[in-house]
Image (cartoon, rainbow, N blue to C red):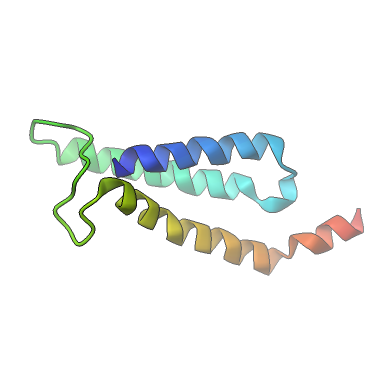
Length: 96
């Protein structure tokens, strides 16, 4: 399920990238989400041993697949917000 959660975030970020002004670096956010989605897909393919391809439960510390997907998105948002803070998009708006 964390694959689907990441894919939904990637699709949402890509749609926002077309709608929202470029100063918010949504291209970087969508690229990070698509990269994470691709890595999770490869992990699922290589680790597939039959049965359900998209699992609702995990065997790790976080047992719910949806919660795991959301937890995996948090570092991506932190990196994106850090880049926004460093690049200071409000200064770019004032210059225009």
